[in-house]
Image (cartoon, rainbow, N blue to C red; front, top):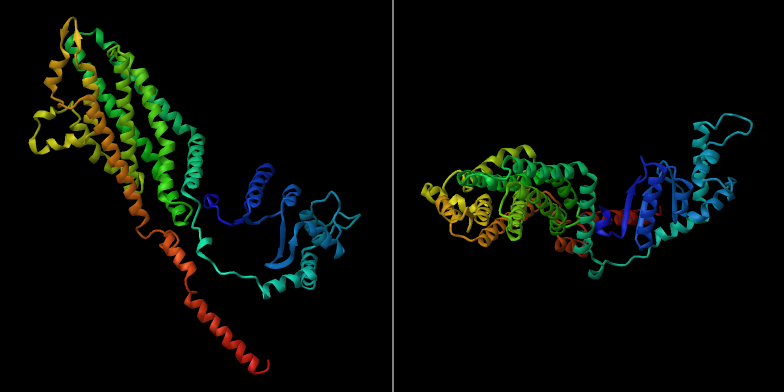
Length: 473
């Protein structure tokens, strides 16, 4: 994720360790591409291959934290040759240091040099480096560095928001594709429940009127419940795991909350749209609902809206609660009132007055009402208009299909905004670095006066140097 920040300097500790030769080489290609963009890449490498070694621009060889060589990689072989350790034309210089310089193979013998000899030779290399022209030139740069103060034009906290969204969306999409089991399970659920509801209420349009009323009502209510609930469960199961990663990376200042939230929605929303389309395409025709293309489109749109609403409520639960067990404990308290006042179990027009308000915050009620009106408005069986009378009997309200769909989307928007606010509260709760994650404070700190501890340390050092010079030391 350091690449998201587009930092001018990258420090990498053994980025190729544990990888096979090809994967390690691919990592080096990526790092080389970053370096070619004008950024500095500092990496610790152990036993790089010859291909990897050729990609290095500047080389630092260490022994027990002390410098054996620091300079251009292209001059390293010549430097070893000057010390009496020539490297063969087809040899890897990195292997040459270990196999020939430190542990010299004795010709005609199967034994390599001992550890004691290797340490002695390393100490000799340290001494030779300190006496080399390269070391003297480096010391001059240290004694008289070229420094320039930080200006406001140089300040940059992280990459632009669009770049953050690009990288985060790409990562989220790759994670979704790699975790094929979750996607396949969600696809299987859409197909399974579509077939289940279709075969349970198969060809209901050919049944008696009383059966049609009961079956259509039950099937549409089941559809509203499953589309809303399954979407919640699919989101919280994944988001509770990503929540910890988001907090850790946000605390590191890699990206902002808006970029993460947008990328999360960009990846998840298409899935939330695709699954109900599959479900609706299977269940609608098996149920024997009205053979009208417009009615089918409305049915599908309602399923999509309920999925999106469930997705928003799932984000909200995942943002408020930090683990799955807590979410599962809190979910019934939110879901069951929505279910109870969903329009089928209780005649909401004649329910207890002081509890009747719950129906107005139930996405299930609005989705169920839209599907019921889509099916029963002007519904005629054997020349008898039975649909409008049934709608008056169940008393689902006077809102039209479009208004009910709008209310489902409105509740989805409220939950979506609430989820963002919950994450915003979480990030501002003091769990992150208050300076690193605040651009204004960070800029003020970098452009302000030096830290008092640094000033005091410099003052003590100056006093010591003055005392030593006065004493003639």
